Length: 188
Image 1 (tube, rainbow, N blue to C red):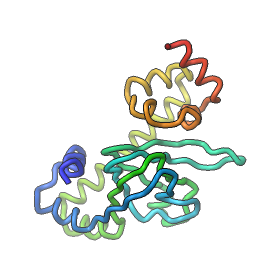
Image 2 (image 1 turned 120 degrees about the horizontal axis):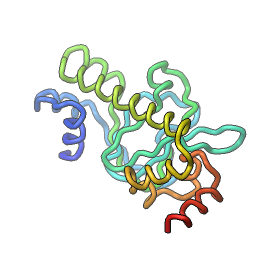
Image 3 (image 1 turned 180 degrees about the vertical axis):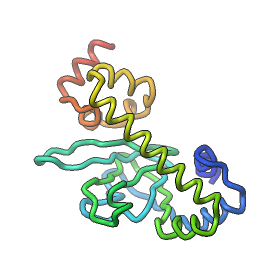
Image 4 (image 1 turned 30 degrees about the vertical axis):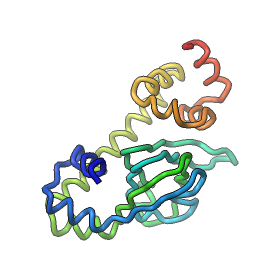
């Protein structure tokens, strides 16, 4: 699991012994395109590492699917509110490609955090990173134009543009499919 270890160490460098403990607590799951990693109103009991593939995180509002986030190769995702409050999730995590996922169980992470300071620091770093990314996303939706959001996505996350269906990208950017088409035509 060199990619997983490298990703973990990019958040907080774990000594080999601590990483081995962490790795022992994980499970690997293989899912197909359109399979659900976390279904509506299920409780999120894991942090998910996308070893290979792509998922979208979305919710349903007034019968429409609103894409909140994408996670793909070498990234983490989870439903924050459900994870912390142990309540049914309004967010849905669905594969949009065949995917291989490593599951980090909450109970194991909490136990390991209690006995290993390095894992506790990793755990904190994971949450801090998630909060920072969420703040950036909210600021983009509040203060940037649709055109600016698309340009930023092209610059910072071109994999999403290459791999995700345009209707999901439009929803993620908070715009209609037609607006996304106009923006893409202006740039190409």
